[in-house]
Amino acid sequence: MSSVETVSALERRLNASIPQQAIRSQVSARLKNIGRNVKIAGFRPGKVPTKIVEQYYGAQARQEALGDALQRSFAEAAQINNLKVAGSPQFEVKTKDQNADQIEYSATFEVYPEVVVGDLSGEKIERMVYELTQADVDNTIATLRKQRATFGKADRAAQSEDRVNIDFTGKMNGEVFQGGEAKDYPVVLGAGGMLPEFEAAAVGMKAGETKSFDLTFPEDYRSKEMAGKRVNFTIILNRVEAPKLPEVDAEFAKSVGISDGDVGKLQDEIRRNLISEVSRRLRARNKDAAMDALLRVARFDVPKVLVDDEVHILMQQTAQDMESRGMKMKGVSLPPDLFMERGEKRVKLGLILAHLVQKHDLTAKSEQIKIFIKDYAQSFDQPEAVIRWYAADPKRMQEVEHIVLEENVMNWTMGQAKTTEKQAVFNELMGNA
Image 1 (cartoon, rainbow, N blue to C red):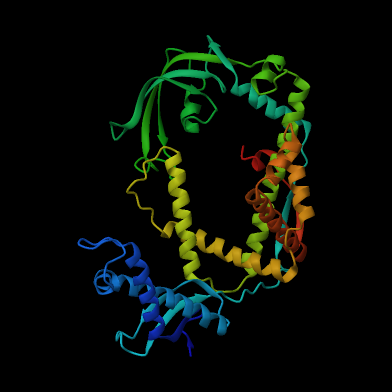
Image 2 (image 1 turned 45 degrees about the vertical axis):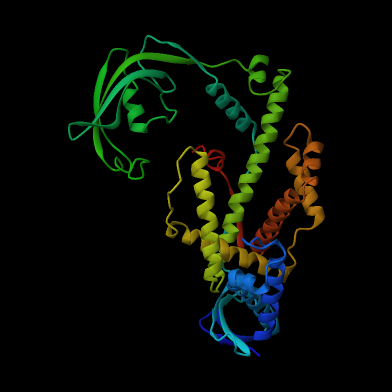
């Protein structure tokens, strides 16, 4: 027999018992199995007396047998009581007497909530749209040219896009601060390598000139020691170099990956890649807008155990990402609170998606998956090879299936809400603004 108590909105406590004889039989079986292979001084393998094996391994065997029995008993009771258990239970064995007929225990755990998605008809969602233009292709080629620019000495004042060689000294309260001094330092003006105010100060200077100016570091500056601080910089401009852009010719096309140097192919490839990237970013923006609308109308509690698991995953991912960027993370503990809000949001969205997919049959159909992969493959030189690459690995296909499923939920959500189209701005969409 078992009983279930309601501790809180999602927390439950199961009270049940296990026959002592079931534990004893499992302990005996475990000790017998251990005795076949155990090595104990003074005995040949397989010939150790049962009493000796029990002295050495009895407590371990009982603990393992009890643990397995608790899991089995809990699973059976959860099924009988129709409990949708979230995460793992916390067991408490109440019977300490090993001679008792029954071992009573309690298991505290959380259950999945009843997901309630409210009325979306009053929600306003903007669906971002954009159609690629020739100007976008031309601007991308212009950017590629700037990235491959060569620089030559210029006997004039520095201007935007020039490369200047400078010495600089930065002082705070009259003292040079760490990282605030350099000699023969190259800066491409307008490229964002330095703070905008710093680069702007160099514009208009000629070789041999010196300039001093005040600058306040942004509040969100990467160095916490300097964030929001006001300092004084002195610049000595050593050299001005003007950019020379490469011609859009066969040599240029080869430098960006077109093996035969065909400029027409370069244009086509850039267009294909931009269409693919624009499509991906539009999907991401629109998905986020739809998911935010769902979060606004959803009303239910989220199991803490699932949030804790998600926070742990986010912490691991962040640590791995930081290590991949060259940071030393050994011994560094990231604060879980930094990930709590994001973890709860991800869990809640996961529960909402699962609910809507089941309730409204929004599963990814095989034909949808095929179309998605086919469309994506068109941005590559050998689309058929890309299609085969996905088909060869079930995990890759599952990833696409999840993307399509999210799109189905997004489209359903936008169909329920007050959705209007909004023309995206290319530079903002691509993160260039």
